[in-house]
Amino acid sequence: MLAALPDVPCNAAQSRQAAPACQPGSKGVASLPYFYRGYDMSGISSASPLADGLRRALPIVLGYLPVGFAFGVLAVKNNIPPSLAVAMSVLMFSGSGQFVFAGMWGAGASALSIMAAVFIVNLRYLLQSAAESPWLAGLPRGQRFLLGLGLTDETFAVHITAFQNGWRRNLTTLFVCNHTAQLGWVSGAAIGAFCGELVRDVKPLGLDYALTAMFLALLVPQCVSRLHVLVALFTAVLSISLKAAGMTQWNIAVATVLGASLGTWLLLRKARHEGLPIDLEGADCSPVCDDTVVGATRTGEVES
Amino acid sequence: MNQPGWLGANAALLLCLFGSVVVTLLPKILPVTFLKGDSLPPLLRHWLSFVPVAVMAALVGPDVFFYDGHFNAGPSNLFLMVSLPSLLVAWWTKNYFLTIAFGLALVILARGIGWY
Image 1 (cartoon, rainbow over the protein chains, first blue to last red):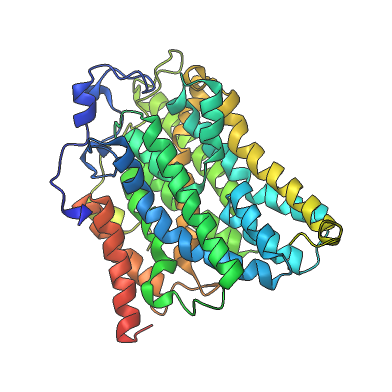
Image 2: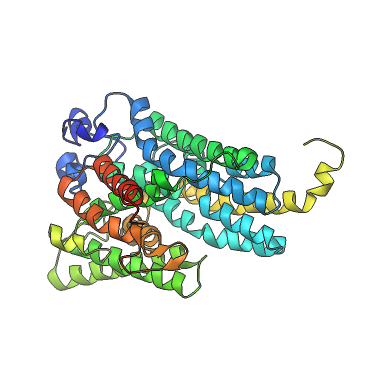
């Protein structure tokens, strides 16, 4: 239904506003570093910020409900009272962190080792929070703090993709999306914790695939150049390998740090060799997309 | 929930929960609250510009290649089999919701038929 909406140019909102104040190094549409402008992403073209936020949260909620439910069931199984399982979902709002917590608590691990493991799993939030900061610059500190509280892998991914698309920042959309997603997460956890026996199996609905489907749909428009495809392939393979080798808590953060470093190194190397205008002195660093756009066949190989 | 002794009975859990909330929220809020996002060193901004693609790949790679808790790169991995055509749909249609709907529909279909 939503997919059938007319393909409004994603930069429409920006065209109306000649000089959006929100974009790093923005000089208008023409200077957008990415070609995402062609990607039909939620929250770009609608007239209502509220509807944008809800639309942006929709796939996240679809994924959070069953995963939150699974967490609620697991938490109770691991001797965590249902009320605390729900409180945890409100306060932590972190899928992987909560699963680590529940699993280790049930296994009788010490409080210190649980906290250490949760922290390691959450290291990637440091990276995501930092990566979002250029797009939220100019907002009062209190609002950036509140947006930080709503940060998850999923909300980060949809917001950053919208920003890269040239979306004009709107606080209503950001907060509505974050809180709708959290409502889905907490609801799922509450149902799982208090009446986990009511729902037998969500698998026939395919919802255990919802978040993976969403990340794939967000990863593809990230691959704007050969360099980005290379970084995606390298990081995915590294993350898989680290997890297969048993580093189940470190793998995301380590792979991301090394992947981003590889991308930066190759970008600088390429700039040095070819004399590309990579401005390392000035303030405008937006043209990070240095390369030719890759073809469909190449991207099709990303996960193969 | 509020019968006498509930707090005492769950004191260790509450303490552990409190610590975990702190180590979850600090990484989320510290950078975005305290970094001056519009005046970061250029090298750091280049590096951060690669974080979205890298972190999404790092998240989705294991999601696709670990099925039922085990590494599986073969045709018995439903998520891998669905993800490959999903990537093509994402690329060709450039449509976010269509790509998600396509992937979910394939999973529902494969399970409905009984292939997986």
